[in-house]
Length: 285
Image 1 (cartoon, helix red, strand yellow):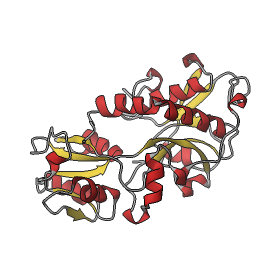
Image 2: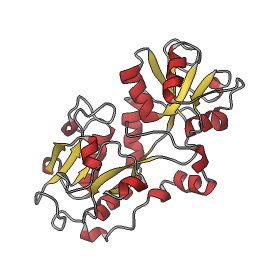
Image 3: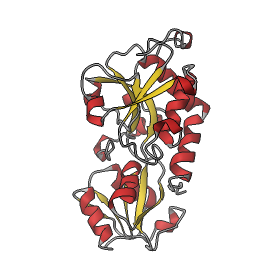
Image 4: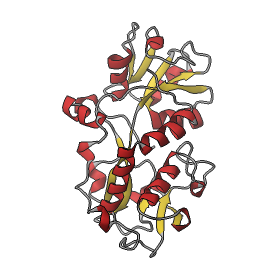
C-alpha cells in the first residue's frame, strides 16, 4: 500500500489548522509558473500535443474502475482527466502508460508526464522525484465485521459504546480518542495486522485505519469486513500527490492545475462521488 498512518508525535496544531484550510504546507511545492505559461502549446510533454499519464497494473478500485484508467471512472482516473483539462488537454489527447509503483518512484527519467497511483508525498521520495500539490488528504475510517453492532451506523455518537482498536502511536488511534471518545477503553496493537486479527476473531466491534488501508482490507483481505464510514480529519494529514520526473518543467503547471481544482471544489466533488458514494465510505458526523 502507498499509504500508512503517521505517528501522533508529529502532530502540531499549527500544521493541522493549515491542512484543514485546504492545503498541506509540509508538502507544499514552491509556487508554480504563471498560468499563462502552462498552456498546451507551451507544455514540454513527452509527445507534443499529448499528455502521457502513468499508473500501475492492476489499478485498483475505488481509485480506478475495472483496471481501465482510460474509462474516466474511479477517483484517480477522474482527477487525472480533470488535471489534463485544466492544462488544456482534451480527453483524446491523454495517453495512459503502465508503470509499476516501485519503478515510478525510483530515480531516473520517466516514461510519463505525470503518474497517479496513491503516491504519499514524503521528503525521502522528493530526493528522487517531484510531486505536485496534494490532491488528496488521507482520512481515517472505521472498519467493522459485517453484522457487527456498529455496521450501518452513521454518527460518531453511534460509536460511543463500541469496542475499537488501532495500531499504537498512529493517527488512527488518535482518531478514536479525540473524535469518537468511546466509553470503552480502546485496544492498542503493535501493528495493523494484529488489529485485523482481533477484528476477525470478533474481539472488537471495529478498527480504525487510514481510508486507503480500509479499502484494501475490505476488498482484498477480510471478506466479511465493511467500511462503517470516514472520520473527520485528525492529526498531521498524509497526502497524495501526482508524481513527476525530478526537476520536471511540468511540475509547477501540474501543481497549478491541482490547486485550481481544489479551490473550485472539484476535488471535493470527485472525492464524494468516487470514495464516499461509490466506494461506500460515508462521512461519520
